[in-house]
Length: 209
Image (cartoon, rainbow, N blue to C red):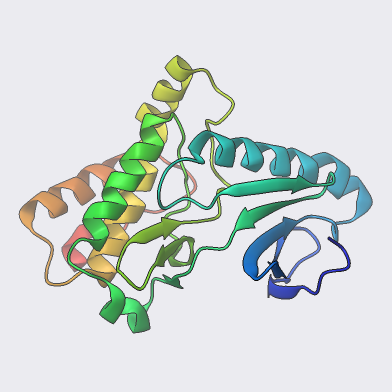
C-alpha cells in the first residue's frame, strides 16, 4: 500500500486525518490516514477516531449512498470505495435533480434507523451529488452511535438527530429550487429551538429564507 502513488485530497494538518486518492487494478479508492500525526496523538486520539469511524462504516455499509469500507490498513489508516460526485456548491446546482433532496432525506433517516448520527451535515463538502442527482454522504469522523446497542442508539438519535435534520434543511434552502414551503420553515424553526440549547452553536434566523 505504501508503494502506491497517492494523490492527496486533503493534507492540511498533522493534527487531523488526511485523505488520499489511490488507484489499484483500474479502480479508485480513498485512503484515510492519521500516520502523519505526532506519535503520542496518533496512538491515542488518532487510532481511537479511526476505530470509531471504521465501526460506523461497518454499521452503515449496505446503505446506498454511503462509501464502502474496503479494509483497515495497518493501525493508522483505512481504505474506502471512491464515490463519484461533486460537493454541494453553486456550480453543482445543475446536477441537483428534483429527487435529490428527497433521496438525501431518506438516506439520513436510514442512517438514524441504524442508531447513528452524522453530526456534520452542515458542511456542504460532506454531501456529494452524483451525475444522476443521487446523493452520497461522506466523512463520518464526527459520527456517533456505531458502538451502541439498539436501544441506546435510538436515544442518541432522539437527542441529537435534530442536528442532522437541521443541516439537511439548511442545505436544501441553499441549493434546492425555489423558496421554502411552510412545512420546511416550521421544521427549521423546530430545529433552531433545539439549537438554542446547544452551547456550541448560535441559531440562524429562519426568516432570512
